Amino acid sequence: MFRRYFINFKQNVEFIHRNQQFIQRQLTPLRYVAAVPEEQTQLEQSHIDEAVRLNPLLSRVPEAQWQKTYETFLNHGLNTSNFLRIAVGNPDVLARPKQRIIDAFENWRSCQFGEKLLFLLLTKYPELLNVSDGLRLRKHISYLKTFAGTDKNVWKLLMNSPDLMEQSEHLIEEKVKYLKEVMRIEIPEIIKSEALSKPLEEIRCRHVFLERLGLFVPRPKKANPDEPSKNPRLYQITNTSEKTFATKVCHVTLIEYEAFKELYERELQRAEDDADEDEAREGKRGYKK
Image (cartoon, rainbow, N blue to C red; front, side):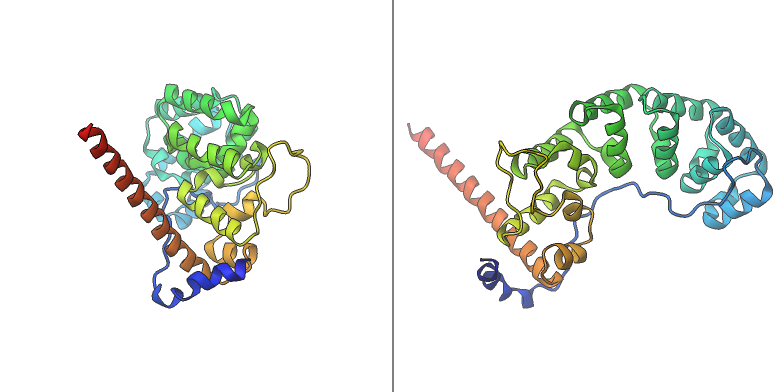
């Protein structure tokens, strides 16, 4: 089946020379941090030096400001290690007024994740401390909870897809609807993946590619959700690079997947053009009447 399908577009491979990427704005987890024992409660010059080495932008911060901001963090339950992680990942925090930092912590505490989980989230994605509108934050968290179910599941969602905080409810709803109703993916699997951080176009493209290869078959609507599926897991579809997705999940070459993307984009454009033409014809008929 899939070999016949490839015959239709392999001829186009030689004409495709660019590697299209779906560009998205996504928060990046902090990978390099100054190593400090968890029980450390003093900010030493060696800690500052290491942080500056990891992020040279911090060299502009006066020593007095380091100490002042550090005390604010310490008073709100974060240890030295957490403070340095956030400083390295989001240097702007050190230039903020004390009250703005306190307000940010209080806004996030109102999300009811619990202090331990909250600090894990903020140290992994220090940019989340840039959220300043507490009312909007609580409203957005409440919306995420409508399909995630619990506060902890919302936390898991943000740990995998922190840029959900920047997405509109409409955009998120479109992706959840596609994953649930078209791909028939259960919510727990969605939560464990990075799917909601991806553009809907990318999710759809990878899903359709797998379907046309015969590697993905939607579950029957009445199927037992606990029954094992032969489909690739959602994280394998969405949490992988294009090369890994093509070679490890689809068992084809990267250039074959790139060729499909090019042809699929044209296919969607033709369908959109046809729909516009049909709509225009219907409009003319209605006008004549």
